[in-house]
Image (cartoon, rainbow, N blue to C red):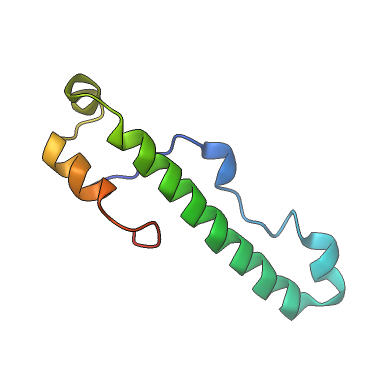
Length: 81
């Protein structure tokens, strides 16, 4: 099943956001950036699954999913891909 992104602006690496922190502490900054990316990914995934759960059958057909496929995806916890 493909990934549907309702919030494409959330999908950038946090490295740019944390560049000033990472410049002096490159390893710690990279670890912090990876942690922020992970949390933002979880947040995006949870929001997308919530939006998917609200779609009717016509909308699901438009994105190429059946109701059963959508329910399987929305039943996953936010940390699972």
